[in-house]
Length: 264
Image 1 (cartoon, rainbow, N blue to C red):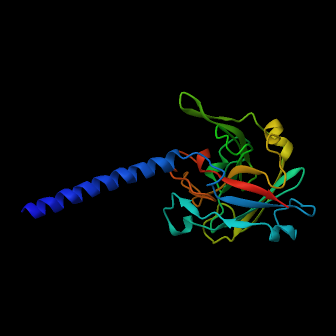
Image 2: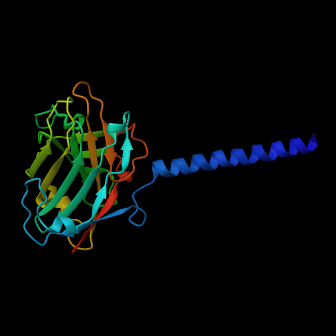
Image 3: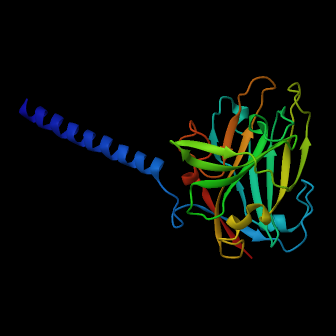
């Protein structure tokens, strides 16, 4: 009996230590700040030719820049909710070029107004932090299959622990979409859609000059896809290029963003 009591005490001790360690690790993940040494890095090649914004990725330079899948999925309730997205990006002295290439069996979209809720539709999103270790503010571009845009400057913990999105930020930029399939018709199977963006660096004003867009410099960013497969209701799945540890909050967790490095 004494031996069993000793074994039980030891097991209890190690179990308690394991639970405490797990809790510490969990807190470390959720509270972790952006670190230039630790965050994943996405390489953004410089465009060596003119880029026509037509949603078709015909330029050879698109094949030379990094391509990465949005492999982190959330709110997946059905097999068709985890559909592939490939993300690419380029830069030059005037623009950031963004390309989303998305497989989609059910093309679905409703929003048509600017600063509405395109994120409830088939939607592509990209957020930028122009000074990569400054986590309070990021620029957001969200566009659905209709090219209806929700663009904003997002302030984390703006007042009394609450975040705020400033929707008065309505910049000019170029966007084009292509798709193969029928929109809002689930009686057939669609192929997918693309979105191509050219975002002027001037959109970011002085905040885009602190760490200028130049070879060797880094910004923080997050690429997101909202995937809506039902014509009715608001259910949709989400995928991101970098992991978000608590999707129940939202996708605006700047300490989960990765880094983009501008290269020649």
